[in-house]
Image 1 (tube, one colour):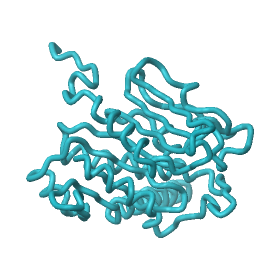
Image 2 (image 1 turned 45 degrees about the horizontal axis):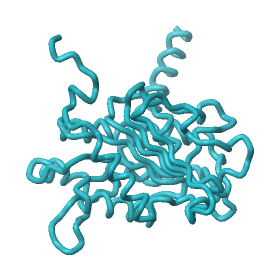
Image 3 (image 1 turned 180 degrees about the vertical axis):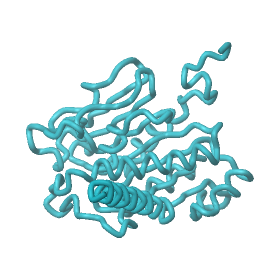
Image 4 (image 1 turned 30 degrees about the horizontal axis):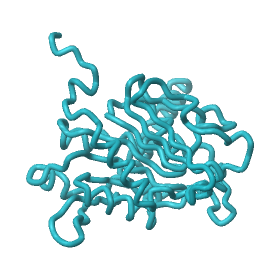
Length: 269
C-alpha cells in the first residue's frame, strides 16, 4: 500500500506541475502585445488578445507574426517592430515572457551578457508554440511567421517545426556552446531570413561567432550579415533601420499565400 501511495503522490505532484506550467504559458499569451493594421495616420492600432477573434473575422491582415522579444522583455524594440509590421498590413502578437509568476533573469543587457538561465530557451519555445497554436486556430488560412530578436531570435531559430510558414531571426548567429541553442530547426524548404551584425557586441565570445547561413538549405533560406563599413555591423537591434524593415517586408511578401502550396501538401491525397 505504501508503494501505491507513493506512486499516487508522485503522479499528483507531476500533474500539478504540468498544470502550473500551462498556467504560466497562458499568462504570457494573455498579457501579449498585439499590433494590428488600421486606417488613419498611425497605420496601426493596439488590441488585446481577447479581441483577436472578432478583429480577424472583420479585418483579416495579409499575414500573422508571432514575435518573441529579447531577454529583457517587451520593450521599444517590440513596439517598433509591431508598428512597422502593422503599418504594412501584418498583424503581430508578442507574448510577454515576464507575465510569468516565476521568471528567472536570463541576461544583463548593461554588459551585455546572456546565458544566466539556460532553461529559458525551453520556456520561450513553449510561449511561441502556444501563441502560434492560438493564432492558427483563429486564422488557419493566413500565412503564419515566427519572428524574434536576440533571445527571441534564438527561440525562433531553435523551435522545432510547428507548421509555420516562415521564420525571421534577428540578432542571433545560430552558433553556441550549448547544443540546444545551436543550429536551425527549420524544415527543408521553409523560408527563413536571418539578420545579424558581424560586430554585434553580444557575440564577442568565439563560440558565438558565425551566422545562421551555416545551417541553411536551399534558396528559400537567406542569411544577411552586416559588415563594416555598414553602420549596422555593430548593432544588435537591426530592424530599427528602414532598409532592414524593407528587407523583412519583402521577405514576407514572397511567402506563398496558398497553404497547400506552402507546405508542399499533395492535393490529390
